[in-house]
Image (cartoon, rainbow, N blue to C red; front, side, top):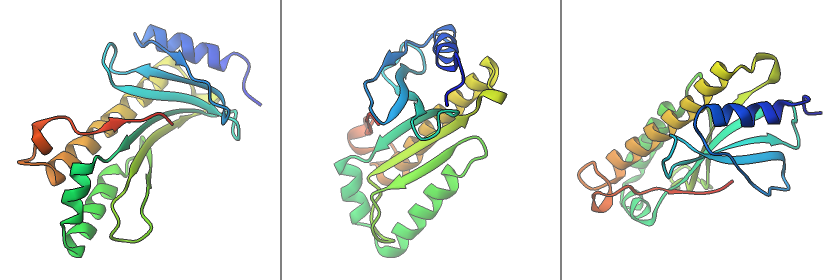
Length: 170
């Protein structure tokens, strides 16, 4: 059962941090908002209380690979694909965040989606700890983007030297 007032407290904290929480209609969650983070940017993170664990507050970022990155990845030999995936997993392995790589049926398949998250529980939830977790998810999101752009982009800047990830909802 969700702690009394946790969702209202977290929503208040998001506003104190300068974010604009927008309620999502998500039947898989008890409570779900998306936020602009960093503030007043087009970047979106999600904050949810899952139905299956209503004592958890989860901060989430989800990234999808674009078709240009997929084309470059498919052109790699198997050894280079294994090296790329090892480096990606090693970079994503952090004390402050968790990750899930989706879309890989085999060892040489390219991931289709990368989810980065941090879970907070009410007994250790303060504005400071929550803000640090939001920042940790965002920084890992950036690290993922930069690493993939560098490895699968053109001249380290990504195809057409533009930002090449599409943010998706959960």
